[in-house]
Length: 499
Image (tube, rainbow, N blue to C red; front, side, top):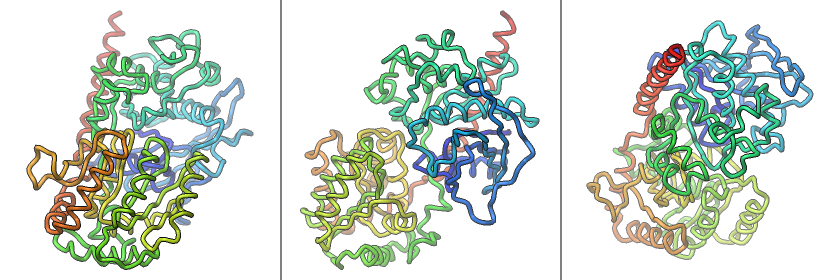
């Protein structure tokens, strides 16, 4: 099967968060399964490339009309780990993808609307037509709409549309539809792209859901939450309406990158059979961060984007509560929102004198690996969490999660005390309400077990390490989903031909 995955991110060359890891991990595993995989990205000027991995022109050039002006585009190629990457490279005065970063620009909607139109044009004219197109998040939500509007039913490429974060839906003004050659009068209706909260605006994610053949989220629990709770962010009724093509597939992690047995970024490798060696990584983490050697204190870590979704109020409280409870604390994270960035800068300054606290405000890949390897506990107090990779990586490294019972955290963590699962399946601590009291209760239970019952705590570590968090199972489920998308598209084409 020829699968074209379209995304704003793909690790390691273009990564801002979990979406990049998702695309890389799934693409690599699908390629290992014998599928032909093509990842389509913008040609960012900030791509993280080795000198030996420079994109090559493929001799494919075309013009993309945008706001009535034809913009020259070419396709660049790059071979990654078992799959091909195609980069959309426009030559335009707007310099859409020459901003030094992936996101956070005032015209992000314009940039990704252009990208969507360029991708639709590219796959439509490609000599090697994909068997299925896999779009991801709001940045690609216009692609299913463009294909549905411009291709006959029996010519359409089947589309799978994955939702990684419903908190970002792509709310845009109606004129952006005109910019890519769509008709707002036709599409800005309750049955298509009109946003439920403001019908004068288009909702790109809503439109993508309507036009795609199958839709999924990145965990079964999140799929249920966005249909039945406020986590649907205003689209609950829309998800329920499209329930017949809607589901959830839990993410995996890339075990070639996240494996304590082979990880080149940690000083000492270890695994379930050699768990005591983790203590050497804990020692190395303390040395790197300048934490005092303290065998009577667990290390409680946070490795996270610092934004409201991740529960920044609870993160800040949890760090201080952990310190007051006799733990050491370590944070690695960064914030885009100025107020949040300033808040954590102040917290860093306030705690700097403590020999038991270190906050690193930024992102450092090697330090992230060392924190997972050296920490004892990791805080994940998310307000919502579609899947979450932090808990999967942490458990792989024998670091026990303390997390809120939402989304994929619910699907992957069994509480040490309050679970119907057998003890050998329990691997962390969960709390329900997004309150400091609930967080403190879970932290108290975790710290007490670490301090008073070290053998049981080691068992929790081992339970987490022995779980299967690979991409093997998700890749099988996505292959089934792609087959269903192709079947659904054939059924749609057949129904259209009978009219």
